[in-house]
Image (cartoon, rainbow, N blue to C red; front, side, top):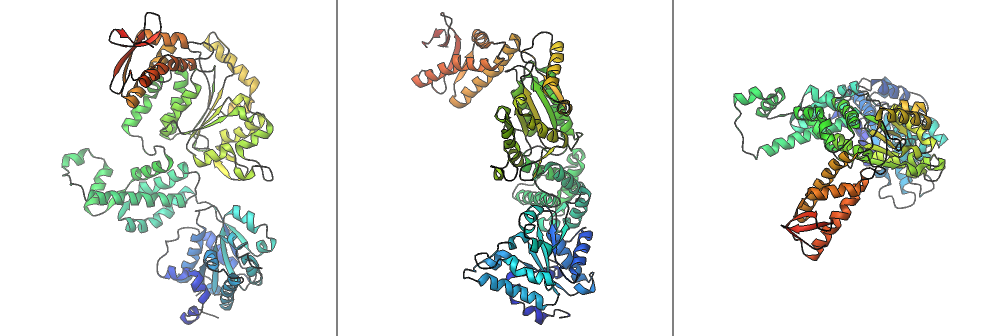
Length: 624
């Protein structure tokens, strides 16, 4: 069959019923333009022109463009930019799910697939079969005596069937590589993830389709920002797919805003408004007057922020002011630890401005010092400032990983061991939430094997779990806490020197050297505790007002009593919270339950004649 005419195509009943003619879609201009991938398309073409075993298996991560290579081949066939052996050929995509659907009787699936294979064989090389998710042929229809792979193997080996398959390397190893006969019949073509530079070219080639669909225009900067920011912030997906999704959703967002604006009262824009507006805003107004809206860097950043949960994009004047004054803000909540606050503030500024090393975690610190001085609290504040919420913390208690066999729980057991399919506690948590603060609590208690793995995280910002998947830590902040040196007192500079010696004795030099900084926390004095009590009582008063609508006034005598009863040089600020619970919260609960206090009431907390904390209305104390 030298050439497939329309009459020949009409005879391809099984292929038309269970497949899709990709060359016909290319002819009708229904495919997106194929940008780049010329080398891969040439390699596929070369393999298809072989006499035997002329079958290709495209392997690569999801979203890198494996299917696009097949579409590029179909487009070349239509334009004639193809060797003579493949001119006028047809590329049919066959879906295994459609072949299996409804094949309830024994042998029905095998009959359908055999018809497809026979029709391809009759074309004498003029039909190329494309099977996406190639690994699905292994075991497909296995309720009968044969599965799909065994039906395909003879035709694949003799060169009677030209086939292109696409799958991920993980699925290839799991299904196809284990079947030696099937593996021999396919030539593997690796499809790597394109670079940011190549992705920008791909986006520029595709952008017209999205502009027409969404009725918007994309700025040059928006396209470049979409490619670079997708690479930097979205670690669980691959280019160009994630960048394409980004511009697609940004276009949809701007289009919806445009439609909503039609229902709102239009405002008159004066020349004075445009004088003080940004260049982008002026462009937007001009685009609106022409019926289109501009998609800018800001729109891309807003979509990216909704995906990742962190602020992305250029720093506004307000945010810049906030970053410059971060030390003052944090010191109102983190009392008595100025040096620690300054250090983490600098790290956050580096990350926000974008001058940090993109191949390492955002920042990595070792917090060491006595218990109850604010190590964990500062970690929560860092999560709040950088990721926007204190809940963006993956907390790992290292006392649970003291033994060698327990260390594998963090990263996943290797193949063949119990728990291999479950993944690691740490790796799974970071895979689900790649933008988070990872807190390793009491790191000195961990087994030495844990430190060997931490070296890779701190240096390369990545880790391979038990399943062989690479987990990205480049968008995490790593904080390790330790109580080493917590017993030391005296001059702070001398304490720091002693702590440094203790750390060198407990941790390997290559581990300490990979940390951005080691921060020694100070012992809290009574003056610090008084300020901490102020913060805690303010939160307590606000909480009662919001939940119970009761206004509480607390006297200075009560505040001092909380400090006296909660002061402990050994335990830091933690006893203060217990003192507030015992002296205030318990008594308040009793008054609410007894009916003495109701919504809308106001009450003062003071010290009575017996020296106990009591509630009073005016000058009269209530009985407790």
